[in-house]
Image 1 (cartoon, protein in one colour):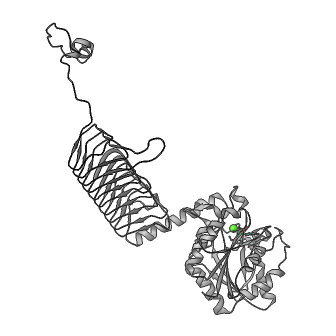
Image 2: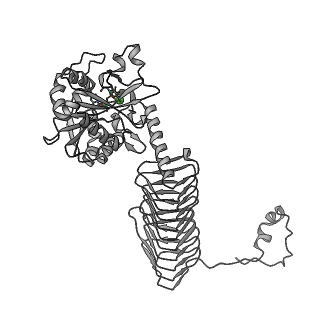
Length: 477
Ligand code: UD1
Ligand code: CA
């Protein structure tokens, strides 16, 4: 594919989206349409990519740059033929074959792009066109073939008569062209049609005039031809991509308890023997190991989860790393840069942010761990809070191995708790605690005998308790 370049047509506004954003910047299954199409082109192994941009181009240059693509600017949207002409000018001379893709057709497979190129070469055709049979072909250009099965015309819906509208075979908007053919015919297109646009599809007429052929390449999967023109189609194609991902995961050895009710984006990686309940959302750059159990209500984005981890119901992971065998949740919140060590337990209503929790350590109930480093086999009691923020800056809490932090402790950072130390329940720790020491900061307890009976007898009456007999003497307070 060294001599093959790709032009991605993406200059249109996409009126039917009713949006301030250019159409191809809209997100489908977690990535913009532009990203998806560029990624497919790159995976197909082409040597150059050119994006044709116009409307809202500033929203798309970053994506183009991420793929090392060149940018051609189409100032006025005069049609797909004009857009292809703009793109062609940016391809380097070594490119002899040109694949044109629509920025809104995100379901084409990399192997289909290669098939298009191969089909054109084999038949020595001017062009190969990816086609599909759709149950409802409305809105698409229709493929008209001659008696040898070559394409004789592509007719846009708005230029079609009733007979042509009945043709179920549609143009996907993806093509492989001989570069020289494209270079000489694009300038010859005219805009004599219902939309007053220069149609790329009219290159078919040019080919016939030159005595060349244009071959149809039927898509292996008719969903591949789908374009996205409206919010409805955006949702439909998103659901198709996610549905295919679910099927691929099951084929690869992942159990989905209810595959229709998981939302797992195409780029997510999941190992064998994982079991995923519903509803669960897994997005972005997430990698999940083998044998992981993910229970209902979990939302996981941009996270790495090790083998054998158990994510109990309603755990939220965002930018977190969880090592093998850890148990998380229910209702745990792992925020960016949370790193949970092997076999550690993070229980209900525990929030961890920008902190390392060592192997085998536990924070099982109601805690906030922020900007902390916690050693191995340390126990963080219920209600522990790292007071990491003084209103101006964030400070670190460092806790060694084998530490026991009693319940309801506040650790006022910056503070260090040495290994093997014990912090008594209810303490507010403001000074470092040496290794193996006991830290205790609560006020001593005082009991006042019979205070309730003397001062609040109505409380006892309410509970049906009899007040004890009390010798008459003044209460010491
Ligand atoms: C186009 C095809 C149609 C095909 C359909 C498949 C033409 C004339 N029609 O129609 O046969 O069935 O795709 O989805 O080619 N664009 C530009 N500059 C322009 C016009 C369009 O860059 O001046 C870009 C758009 O941003 C879009 C792509 O080209 O990504 C296709 O344009 P769109 O308006 O969606 O074409 P369709 O009407 O869908
Ligand atoms: Ca379209």
